[in-house]
Length: 66
Image (cartoon, rainbow, N blue to C red; front, side, top):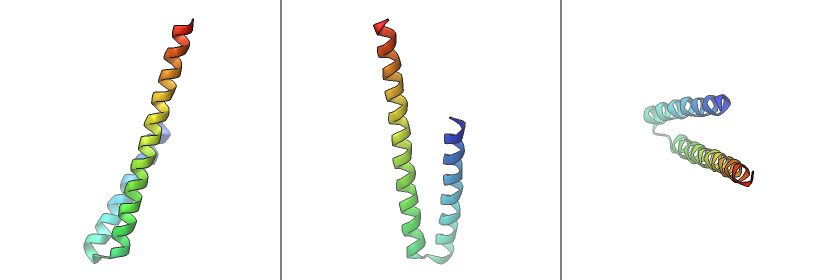
C-alpha cells in the first residue's frame, strides 16, 4: 500500500514538472507527454482499485464458505 502511494506521489511530481515546462514553452510534445502520463496514471489507479475489490470479494466469499 505504501509503495502504491509513493508511486502515485512520484507520478504527481512528474506531472507537475511537465505542466510547468509546458506553460513556459507551450510545447506540443510536452503537452502530449503530460496527457499520456496522466492517462497512464488513471489506468494504473483503476487497475489497483480493481485488484483491491477482487481481493475483498475473495475474502468475503472465503469467510462465507466457512
